Length: 321
Ligand code: BT5
Image 1 (spheres, rainbow, N blue to C red):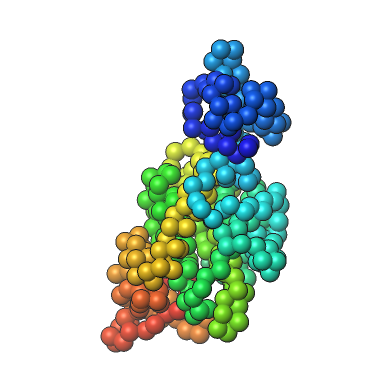
Image 2: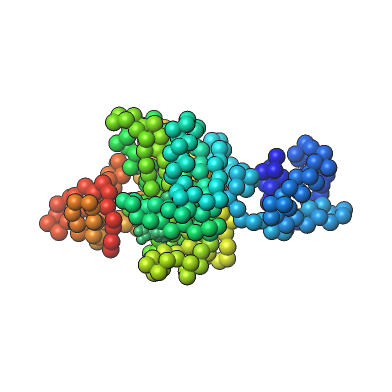
C-alpha cells in the first residue's frame, strides 16, 4: 500500500493532491491515508499537508527500498521481489543464497553500500553509501550455459536504455561489460552462474551504476577514468526511478531474446556500442592482441582483425584504445 501511495505522491509532482482523492485511488479511509503518510514521514520523507489542498511531497530520501522501487516499477516480474540491505560485502552473495533457495526469476538484491563490491577477476568495485545502484538480478534462462555471455551484452543494453530514458544522457557501451559517458566508466557488469555443464540453474547479474557521486568521491586510482550521472548531467538523480526503468528495459529485452534469439539485442547493442570500428588492444588472460574491432558474432563474441588480416575471436578481455 505504501508503494502505491508513494507512486501517487510522485505522480502529482509539485501539485497538492487531496486526502479524499488519495483515499479513493487506494480504496482506504482518509484516516488510513493519514497513518501511511505518518509512516513515510518517520522514514525521512517530507510531506506537506495543507487544509483544503491536501498533500504534497517535498523531499524523498532517495533510498533504494522495496517501497521506493515499487512506486516507479512498471514490470511483470523483474524487481517484484526485492531484498534490500543497508550494507553488504557484495550484493552477489545474498543473491547467490536467494537463488539457491529458489528465489523467482526477476528477484533483485540491492544495497545502499557494498564494502567489498567486486568486479571481474577479483578486482574491486567501489560502491560507496547512498550514491549509486549496487544491484544483483536473478535470472533463470532456459538456454544452455554457453549462451550466458550474451546476457552481459543484454545487461549493457538495458542499463544504457534505462539511463537514456530517465536522464537523456548519451551512455555508450564498451565491449563487453562497461558503460561509458564521455569515455569514462559509469557502470560495470559482472555475470555469475549456478549451473551444470548443460543446464543453467540461475544467473546472477551484478551491475553497479554511479549516480550521485562527485568526482572527488572516487578513489584516486580511478578518478580520471570514472564518472557518475550527476557529474555528466545536471543535479542529483533518483536512484529508485533509474533502477525501475532499467528493470523495465531489462524485462523487455530479456523476454524478447528468449522468444526471438539474440538478433534484436545484438542489433540494439551495436547501435549503442563505441567499441566497434575502432583500433583497440584486447588483453585476455592468455595474450594481448591489437587490431580493428570488426563487430560481434551472432553470439556476442568480439571479432578482432589483427594487422596480418587474421580474424581473432575474443570471448573475454579488457579493452584499451
Ligand atoms: C566490473 O568489473 O566493472 C563489474 C562491476 C560489477 C559491480 C556490481 S555492483 C553489484 C554487484 N555486486 C558486486 O559485488 N559486484 C556487482 P571490471 O570490468 O573488472 O572493472 C573493475 C574495474 O573498474 C576496477 O579495477 C576499477 O579500475 C574500476 N572501478 C572500480 N569501481 C568503479 C566505479 N565505481 N566506477 C567506475 N570504475 C570503477
